[in-house]
Amino acid sequence: MRLKDKVILVTGSTTGIGKSIAKRCVKEGANVVIHGLEPDLGNEVLQEIGAKHAALHIEDLKGEGCVHRLVDLALSRFGRLDALVNNAARVISSNIETTDLTLFREVLEVNVLAPFALIKAARPYLSQANGCVLNIGSVNAYSGEPNLLAYSVSKGALMTLTRNLGDVLHREYGVRVNQINPGWVLTEREIIRKREHGLNEDWYRRLPVVFAPAGRILLPEEIAAAAVYWLADESGPISGQVVDLEQHPFIGRNPPKDESNISTKK
Image (cartoon, rainbow, N blue to C red; front, side, top):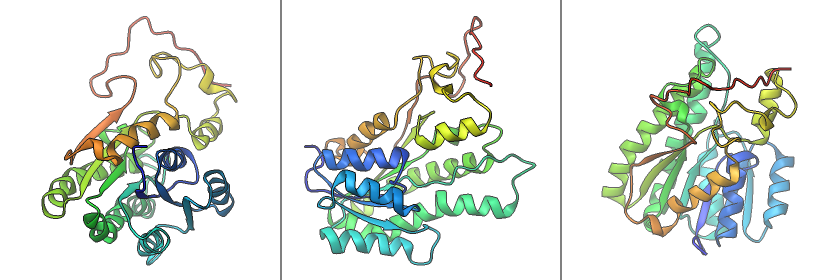
């Protein structure tokens, strides 16, 4: 088992990518701290994983002292902290017209400032364990969709944070910091979000090749499988790296001219 006896804190792990990462970590021998906003979903994950290998904390990351309570839970329950996965994020559709400063600040608070605060709170214990941080970003960090303005900017900021701290924390404290940027992933909430945008109930079964050359988009379990490498000792001294996980080059990609535009609209 690649993560045997490690203690890993995964934010935003009651659904989607975070949930899959938490489950995969336990499968690889780790103990995990599950975090999210929904008590019912959190308890479902806890029951699925088993209370022996997991602890649950339900709280908004913006809450005063939340990051310290998460770290303290890992220490009190499992006695150490080997890795932090900053996965929780606010995904809000917004553009130049609909993004006001209040919305922008909220997105930055959860997607950038909370990961920074968690890294600061966890750093002494990660240092003791020669541990690591894995930030979950997005390929939207490079420019983003027109209606994901605030979200995309926040992921760009997270990428810079990873590059900066990946150097400093590794040299000074022995803590590696890396990031993976998933592309389009078929999470529970993405299914719902796209239906709310007017797509068919089974929109993910009929996607244009320009968006899904493989005929489908990524699964949360596939992101979780990739995350294990960065959380395990096998990634060695690698730090400050950002890896894109998508089916095609995100920058400078030219869709084929004979692309069949399969409509997914109702």
